[in-house]
Length: 343
Ligand SMILES: Nc1ncnc2c1ncn2[C@@H]1O[C@H](COP(=O)(O)OP(=O)(O)OP(=O)(O)O)[C@@H](O)[C@H]1O
Ligand SMILES: [Mg+2]
Image 1 (spheres, rainbow, N blue to C red):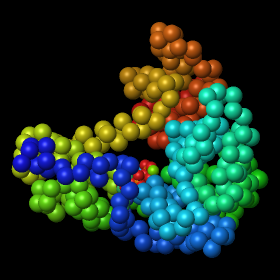
Image 2: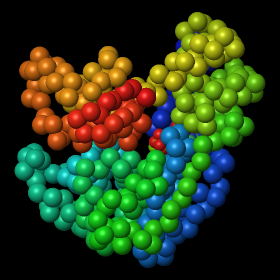
Image 3: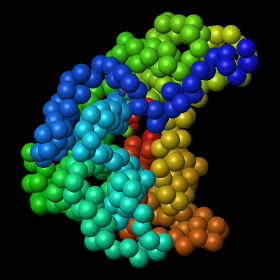
Image 4: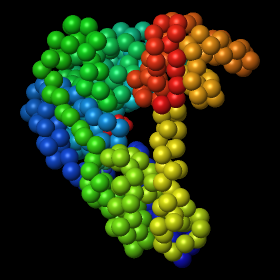
């Protein structure tokens, strides 16, 4: 047998984008979401849904899983998934939606007006129902995009956020249109539930017999209810074992993997930041804690030294609010005396 096949059978199974064929310990949420989508199978309007809960509690996974199931059985339905953190503006969200539906736009995308995108969406939703999943919706720069989509016939929304209150600041027109939405809460997983999720991943992704139940329990105990951290830990442990040319994952491999998986989940958040947010975050990381005025000066210096144009302070404040909402940074005090620190 080749060393690279000793531990990992299918690496894809241990990545974030993999949609599992079995989603355990979420029966209530699955059946509520299915009920919301069910009208589509009778060519009727779905009920809009809002999924909320802590990181790694299965919101993205379950949203996609149930939409996959729906579209697999309903030829007149399609779904699209947009990560709003990656595409935060109204324009980018709509562009991602129509792109995902197969609309190819002319080269000068920047010149494409929003109306044109909405027209394209309307056309695509003419003879089929479109479910739009907007993940990390609290990161949207402009909530009006919700209005755009809610006003389009044959389109429904699955919104996802860590916070139940994500839409409270949206304007009245939007809130009233979403007032009949179903709110589905997700909780952090219990340790034995995480161990079950890991058991499935090991069965699909690893060579049989290379990992044991007690090791799933150890990983689960350190994951704080977060399935992403748990799966990352299993993947890292498997990689360590494979690189060491071991026949099995040992407890020592797991111990080594535990801190690395925690770092990975931070790195994933970093990936989502734009260049300005990265520089701001970098200044805070280096200093530990920093006053806002000093932070903005250091940011400006860093940008200029890279020959990049710095943003105005108002925009920076908005970026800092986002970093705070995402839990990466803590803020203390108000106004000019506000200090920021890494959380
Ligand atoms: N019940 C489950 N069964 C199988 N896999 C799961 C389950 N819940 C979560 N996962 C897996 O755990 C990982 C994290 O889950 P997911 O991305 O859905 O979390 P999330 O709630 O969207 O977190 P965040 O708020 O950080 O985006 C994914 O790889 C997902 O496939
Ligand atoms: Mg998610």
